[in-house]
Every structure is written in structure tokens, then in C-alpha cells.
Length: 416
Image (cartoon, helix red, strand yellow):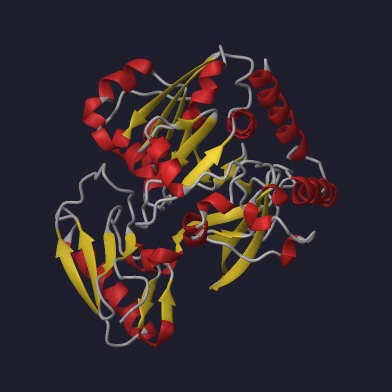
């Protein structure tokens, strides 16, 4: 009964705060009240903010390294990181759910949430992504590297069947099961959705969501063309649910549960600071994300008051760091490669301060490969003369063991 109450209350609150026609001013007034209650009631419940000021802007900025180093100070039960890692195998400690990130950047993060928060998250997902799910049976397939009890909350709903398919054991091991399950809703990283299309999986989902990785331009038309459905996005991380696609195709920030601040990152991009004011167990206040966003200049045509994101560009970790403090963001590098014709897959990796490698599949016409190499070298010459590009031709198969990063900086955090 408590689970159903939490799901439904979260569902209807989310729908109410994101409804078309609600003015931005009225939304911000409601958000400000919710944030003020959280600052007063929940923030002081953890050691890190026992003497927290009343204004959010007075709090220090935090990040993953700080949170993991002092994990016990940011969660209400006072769990240490060691205790949380020990409880990860079973997915819980008592009635608390424990989860972690896949560690794409080499720095895995932990999260801990209560039972009530699990079901609130479910209600929010249902409201944002699966409108109408309350009135008809649905089969939801989630294809991700790790299963957690967070998703198991959905199994308490009698009209919803949910199965999680583990990327890391390889699609060949569960293709038949996935096709037999015949999901009506399919959620997976873009590289897996593309693999399903290229391998002609027998699937006919009514809605498709890309999640957990950057959605690069070459992937969308291939996925949408095969499934004959628009491809939506879910921007979700260890730290929470941050954005979802509306029915008009706009990617909206989850401002009904998270307060966003933005730090400029150059070229019109921003990195978000997030404050999760609906979370009570693990506190995240002014937490710096590693993602690069391009905000939309105009509201979405759907009429929602929630802010509209034009593009999730990539991660700060994957900016190329060149001599003289020059940074090249993933979108600029990606666009240079894609300026050549016929390219729908590639890898561009910074190997050192002066060496960059472009990997292209052998079946790509040589003229297109050389055109891409020329475009990238010209960009490098313009921004940081002395950087040399090496062109490598080899197959680019699906790698189930790691997230796809077409643009990748393989340097340590600081250049020597």
C-alpha cells in the first residue's frame, strides 16, 4: 500500500509540475518552496551540512571525488563507502538500496536510497516517459551494464512486466530471450540499439529510449529507420534522473526534482551543478556533474515549463587537452570527422599531448577516410599547431565491456 501511494503521489506531482500551460514563473515559485523545505528539513540531517546555511548559494560546490572520499558524511544513516561496497552484491543494506555507476571515467560512484525514494523515482519515470502506462499492460526491457533494486520497484505494479538484460555478458547470450519477451518499451544505450538494428533483431517496441551514453548523430537515423519509431532519450546517471524526452521530441530537465545551476564551459556549452531536493537519504547539493550540455534558446513547443536541452554533447573528461591550455570539446571534434561523406562510425582518441588517432572501419571508401583525416588535422592545426593525427583502418565491433566513447581523451587528468 505504501509503495502504491508513493508511486501515485510522485506520478501526479510530476505531471502537475510539468504540465503544458503552467507558466515558468508559477513553476519556479513551486520549485523554490520545495527547495526551501528541503534545505530546512533534509539538508541538516547529514554530517556534511549539520550547520548548513539557509541559502543554497552559500553551500560549497561538491563533486564525485569529494563525495566518495567522505561518503558517510553525505548520507543520513552514516554508511561508509566500504560498507556500501560490501552491500552492493546483494543490492541492499537493511531496507536501503545500494547501487553504483559503471565507472566510465575510472571513478565509480555509489548511491543509497530508501524504499520510499525507490517508488518516488518509479512514479517520476512513469509520468515522464510512459504516459498511458497506467491504463494498459506493458513489457519494459532495460538493457544496461548493471541491474539494481531501483528497477525492481516496477515489478510491484501488476500491469507492468520488466526485465533487465545485462550488456556485459553479451547480447548473443540473451537475444532469444529479448525477442521472445517482445518489449513494448525498450531502453538501452545507443550502441546497443544500433546493434539491434544492424543485426536485425525481431523487435517491435512502441517506444524506444536511448540512455547511459551520448547519442551521436550517426546513430539516430539508423535506429529510427529500423524500428520505424522516433528515438527518445533519458539522461540519467548515478546521481539521479536529469532529463527526458517529451512527446514533441524536446529533452527537458527534471527540474521538478532537481535544481540546476550552470557553469559556462566555452562555445556556448555548460556543465550542470545539481541539487536533488526530493532526495532524503543521500544528500546531493551543488554537485558538479561532468557532462557538457547545450541549452536550447527557445521553449519547447510542447508547452512544458521545464527547461529545454538542445543537446547532451559529451563529458568534460573527453575534451581534448592541448598545449597552451586549449580545450576541444567532443562536439567540435565529432563534427570535424562527420564533415566527410559516408561516415557513420569512428573513434577519435587523444593519445598524448601531441598525438591523436582517428580509427575508421576498413570498408569506408578511402576518399572519405582521407577527407575526415584532413578535416581533423586542419582543426588541430588551427587550434594547437604541432599535434599530429594518425589514421588507422580497422573494424569497430560492438564492445559490451565498456561504454561507447567515439571521442575519447586517453590522458591522465593533468598533462605532464
